Length: 616
Image (cartoon, rainbow, N blue to C red):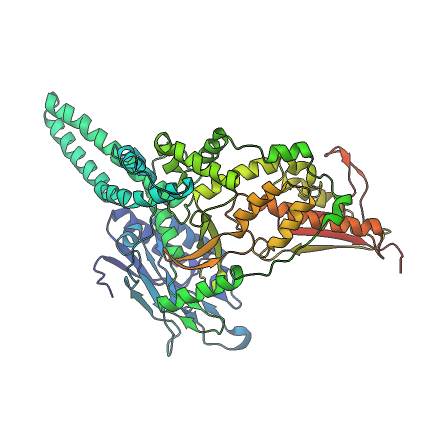
C-alpha cells in the first residue's frame, strides 16, 4: 500500500442532469486552480460515460453522458485503472426491472499517474449496500529491470555520436549481422547512462523556467544591466533546449501522429502518455473457467498460455501444389520479372528503407527506433548495409533479429478477458528494412496478378472502389421480376494468424515466383519467435505461426492468398458444377469498364454473390 496524502475531492452527484451541472462547473474550477499537484476525484457521480456502463433498461441519458464527457475533457481527469466488479450500483430489482450501472469511479490527473504510475482501485462486492465500495491500491507491481527503449531525444545530445563511435569501432568476430546486433546490445547501457545524465526532463524544464523568471524579474529593476541581458539570453536558450528535449520524448511515447512539427503543447503529450500507460496496465484477468486472477504471476501465465495456443506451437508441414489453378491466373511471373525480383540489392535501397520508417513507430524487442539509425547513419551505416546485404546473399536471418513483442491494446473500455486485448506485433527495425525491400519488389508485379475484385494494398487501387461497386450492384437487389439472388459476407477471424506456411509456399509457386525470392519470404515468415509484453515486461518465448500484422510484408502476402480463393471461384464458374454465381454485366461509367462481378474483397472480409437460374 502507498500513503496518498495529496489533493482529494469526494463527489456525490445529484440525481438529475440539470442539478449535476453545478458539479461539473466546480470540478473545472478546481482543475484550473491545481497546477502540478497530484489530484484524485472519486465517489458517486450518478451518471455514466457511455451505454457500455449500463446493463438493463434505462431512460434516455445521452445528454447526461455528453456533459460528463465534456467535464473530463475540460478538467483533464483520467480514469484510474480498475479491477473487480464491472458495475458499481444495482437497483436491487428482479427480472426486466433489474438495472446495473457504473456510477462510482476514481479519476486522477496527469501528476497523480506520474507519481504513482501503478496505482489502481478495486471495485468490491456490494454486500448489503446498493453501491460497491472502492478501495485504492498503490504500487504493488513486481519491480523488474525495465525493457530498453531508445529515446529519440538522446540524438540531440553532444555525447550521442562519440558514444556510438566508441562502441562501433570495436571489431567483433562472426557474421556481419551478428556483429551489428552485438554492438547494438553493447550500446544499451551507454544510452541508459546517458538518459540518467539528462535527468528528469520535465523537472529540467520546470527549473529552467523558474530560473529564467527570476532573471527577468531582476532585469525589470535594472533594464540596462549588460550582464543580466546576456544571462537572460543564456537562460532562454537553456529553457528552449530543455523544452525541445521534453517534447521530443513525450511525442515519441504518446504516439501522436497528427501533431505538426511546430506544435509545442506538452499538456497534450503528458495526457496521452498517461492515458496510454493507464489503459495498458493489467491488474486482473478472468480465465476460461470464470475465475478472476489477481496475482501478477497468474495473470502473466494466462496471457502467455493463451497466445501460445493461438499463435505458437509446431504445425505439420505438407506439400501442396496449386499450379493446377494457373490457367485461371491473371498473370504469372515472367523470366524477366524473376530477374528483377532477385537482382542484387543496392545500398540506396537499404538506406531508403531505413529512412522511410517513421521515428515514432513502436520499436521491436531490441528497443531501437528508426530515429537511432537515422541519427547514427554516418557511423553505423556501412556495417548495417553489409548486414542487410548478407541476408539477401545467404538467405539466412539471425534469430535475435526476427523476434517479436506482442503489445496488448484493450479493445474495450474495461477489459476482463484475454480476448478483450488486441495483440499488436512489434518487429525490430532491421527486420522491417529487410521486408520493406522485399515488399518494394513484390509491389512491382502485384497489380498484374491480382484480379479487379481485390483493391486493398494493391498499388494504384483503392479499397473504396469496391465499396462503390457493391453499392451500385445492391441498389437494384429489391426490384421485382429479377432472378432469385443472395449475398454472403464472410469475415475471416484471425485471418493473418491462421495462415498455413505450406499453403503460402504453394501460393508463391503458383504465381511463378523464383525460388530465391520465395526463400527470402519463407525465412522471414517461418523463423520468428514472440514474447507477450505485459505491464511493460516481455514474458514467454514461443515460435510464431501464421503472418504477423506488424510485418510490412504480411498485407501483400495475404492479398496473394486471397487471390487463390478468387481463382477457385473462377474455376468453379467455368466448370459450371451445378450452380453459377450471379454476375452484373453493365457499363459502369464511373470506372469506364464493364465488369463481371462474382465477389468482392475488402482485405480480411469477402462479399460473395450467387443467384438461381432455374437449374435443379
